Image 1: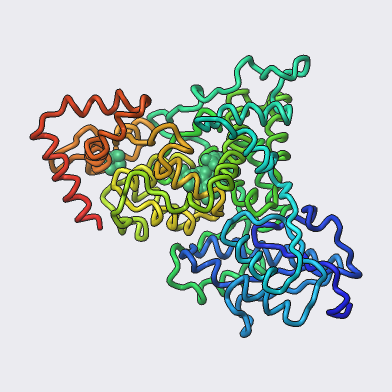
Image 2: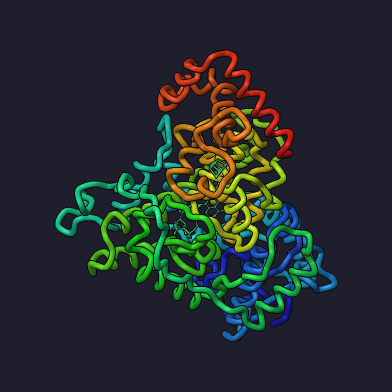
Length: 517
Ligand code: FAD
Ligand code: SF4
């Protein structure tokens, strides 16, 4: 094929690794070519952890190999190509300097920044850009926007019910308007803590020894991004669809039955528990959310997993995941700069070192740096809670979450971090801040048993920093939070504290911030 006769140049980004994507359905090997690029910018615009970069690069190389095996022409820039400009826009420009396709075709990118960069290149070269709907979601952004239109407040529950009706998942077969079990949501049954002896017989996670492609990538990441966060020693994530399907199958068989009960529970040193560990595969598009949800539903139909576990899991996959994407695309680009609580402190050093006297933070951050993974409650109610109460600048918190987790892509990470966890959007995502004392962590884990602080003390040498900062948070934001009916009870408790004690709490919080900096 001569460069002049190229019909479509099909752009495939690192998180678009699906051979059946819409952008590829019309692929004609005699007239079209694929385009992929490994670029440093994606690991440096925020410092991406070594695990995250290695996962993306390895999955991209495996995908590229499979596409070449189909005989497809592929323009692929390696990270260590000496001519690599380091940016997606730069690489696309370089390709277009010697290739003139009639059209650029791609699935709509997940990130605003990337969309803008590619649109700018297409405009500059005066080449049409055909953006296909990303069929890797169950709902479109248009559907979400229609749902959101005219609503004063957006809440997951109503959107989730619409998606349940649309898919028929867990709906009565004789009346598809009715949820199986007579209720939509079994959240109240999904908040168990482990018994005193902790979790027993947790099934081992499905992990993959790095193959030659992954080992090459790991060596490259190790030298190229030596100072980026985290380590690669434990790298074992799924990098192909076949591997991702293995992780899903093992979850459905071994972990799903207890997923619901222990969804919120944490335990020192227990990284994997009863979670699915499929978020990275879903976000790279190695798995489709509907196949994941159907697999869980079938486990319920076979009698292999209880309804509360299956509903709880399906709600995450077809509810929260779709909902945060809708929030992202209907709120960007202003969303990323929001800071409703005017939090301006720098993110404390523990986020990068994992060194802290706070046992909960130490465990959650150390496992994050080692594996690029922590489960939802560790993210929301340990690292997220601490940043919220500390008053860390939400954009720094966002950069941390986007950098360190293997599943982090901005469309999903940003609303979770800036909205749900930091309340920086003023309540678009969550109806109230997720603020709690150390007693929540004590209830849901064994962290406090191994900690020198006392979760029920708010001042004094043994006071738990989470608890001190919680009261400081309520005192600092009392006027704003008092307007929120869901916070009224919490905020009224501030009035029961004497002025002297309030001052002591604030002084201790200030001292903690200075020392944690
Ligand atoms: P499981 O607990 O087994 O849940 C099943 C699946 O449900 C997940 O794989 C995921 O795809 C989906 N899911 C669950 N909760 C959410 C949610 N709140 N939003 C979107 N999808 C959800 N998830 C990401 O995929 N990428 C991120 O960058 C990300 N950043 C987060 C940042 C913060 C501050 C918080 C509080 C949550 C974040 N989440 C993110 C959501 C959630 O924590 C992860 O999806 C989950 O921990 C991944 O582990 P798992 O696959 O074992 O999930
Ligand atoms: Fe965390 Fe406080 Fe418990 Fe220590 S006492 S583990 S700091 S919640």
